[in-house]
Length: 159
Image (cartoon, rainbow, N blue to C red; front, side, top):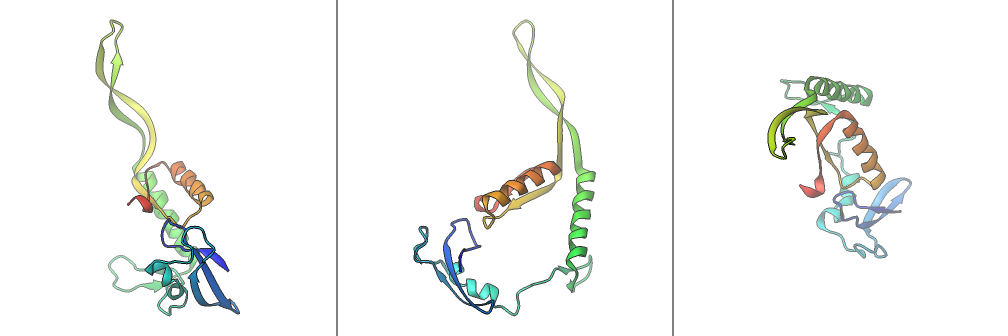
């Protein structure tokens, strides 16, 4: 099966060989125009990402003050994340903000005045995107985080 490496934004082509649904080999795709079969060290280790007995396959939760992780159900984990996002957004949401702006006076001069501007934003949440997402996923994710009022939106490729 042909696929794209999930590690960075370069988009190298990978050939994944499987038998009965189990990955048995991964290698660079020689027909891919970006990497022409070559892979970096991370792309070359892709086989180990799938076939690793230490790979986390279920959500883990560590309670405040605890030193142990415990397995939880996806529904519970996603519900907790949603609650924390909603709580943080509600606590930190700003509808207006004061800012100094220059205003032209009737006599042609400019003076600096403080105005209250509508901002509808939250400063309590930031988002970091991933290079492993395609354009459509990035578009819908951007729409979602902006609808929450996030202004601190960054991407892994720029960090």
